[in-house]
Length: 481
Ligand code: BG6
Image (cartoon, rainbow, N blue to C red; front, side, top):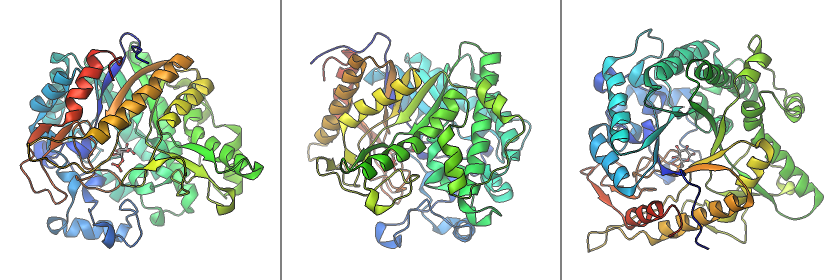
């Protein structure tokens, strides 16, 4: 099959501020809560994710920051490579570049009434450089990182005061950059707060007076409100803007056709769709009320929340897609576990244990479009792998090309099924610090960055084989894979 993608399809790549920027204290930038996350080798993690940090560990990392490997402070040193990196994106033919803004580069503690001039100018420079290369920026307002001050003093998103601070930031972004940025996402993977309250909520559940799930869902409620108010503001003040949401799409398969497996798959799926339901339909779905009752979840709703959510629904839905999971009712796994460990005998895994399943992407696109009837955007997809520099000085990442080719084919098929798809941004187009593993050696890019897990290296960029391959794909609008 060699079909072209729709005219105007937004081919591109994606990164986030914390994972690429570096320059963590430049221009008066304040620390973000991710600046205190420490890389540890798998053997030193005691079975815990690096995102499951306690408040005690946080303060310890802060106290001994100079001796800790705090990789999000370095990223890929994008702040010093803006021109070069975007030139590479332009050379590949990107139509869009998905990136995020570091809230604390503009408002160091999140509470200031005026932003830092240097931060404001920095993002103008990035957007203007993109436009020079014919690239439309697609900007995420929160890709996890929030000013550390808000974590320390307010327990992050659990506290309703953060909504007002966020709105000051979000409205500033729209007012300041609306001429340069048409596509916006409010929160990256808003559903990941359930997997890591620290990552997604910038908070410590042990510090809360609520039970764990109430703390998570209170913070999530605040994020839904913050997002809806932002979308409403954008629609009112800049009608041409396209406002989207973003979730991590976990596609679930029942282990067998046993009705209990099928039922639990349905429940898991409903739970994951709940985040989209609120942001697309503007209301909490019926099934979540029972989930709250069953799990002793109590939240204080924001006044007038029903009207706020209804008024601020998104224009398109976007999602990350990496793997699919198998649901086994005998394991009694909670529905909020998006990353189930049950092996799928029909699929291969990446080195990090993520299943490789292009057909799952076609299924996800059909399912989401079928439910929401909104244009879709695959804002993250890619293969995390170790890359070696060959004796010829090149990086022959045929495995990445194969992965991307298969997923692009799956999108092509979904479009033929009738799905409206706006674009595709390959995750980590520039090598960056992995989020869950906080390391450089889990690489996603078409552009290699010379840095290791400890931050040693020149940070010099070089093209991988996938660079030329993707260039050809974009030039042929997806017909030459
Ligand atoms: C998504 C995140 O979950 O997956 C990214 O939005 C992240 O920030 C990406 O980097 C890949 O995950 P990881 O853990 O391999 O970096």
